[in-house]
Image 1 (tube, rainbow over the protein chains, first blue to last red):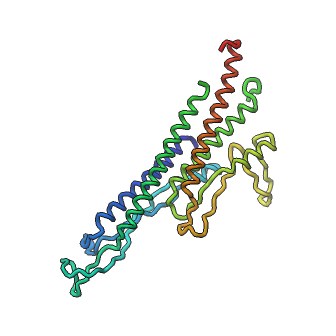
Image 2: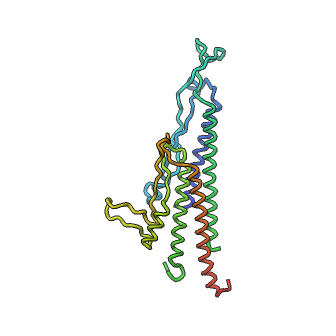
Length: 139
Length: 135
């Protein structure tokens, strides 16, 4: 265990939050997408996070240290139907199937993602600061 | 360790420095996992660990000879790590509170800086003595 491990942990957090940002961007961009390769409307993407122990065979502390890993990006196959007969993909009754994406919810997700990313960056800063302080010992 | 130049205060400061950097790594893990379902925030109970070390006047901590005994707070080099339970209203079972974690982080890094200063002072005194008081 050293300060470099801490950089790796914060790095895993930064990577996970950036991936989450990408899924939010994808969901927002495709909020009205009715056609995909599968023939269904776009399916909302959700990243699934999982904590990953740094060293499962280490001492008490090392077994408790955990970075974060993305165990997958899952698609939510839920759609909402709205009435819009002028839409080219409307069925006989004028109903169109759209992805079940709430832009407001995505916005909130976007903001919490940004805050989490900032928090991880702050930890990187503090880690660097502590390492610099340690280098000052004996000066 | 030699008790001539580097006494128990010096090694004590070193131990605390080590503990502080361990706590820093734990907080980094907590913040990285702020959105991981079921993750429990982890921390070193400093008051317990340091209090026990003070009472025992050494860094061995309380020894257990049977699993039935009460668990001690660990040693200074291998301290106990506690977990915060998630409140019932936390839907994803995650017990990381960003504010608490950031506060713990900055307090920890401030105390780390304080201990670094202590070690430096200690060394400055030695240097002063070694230079016949001219340093």
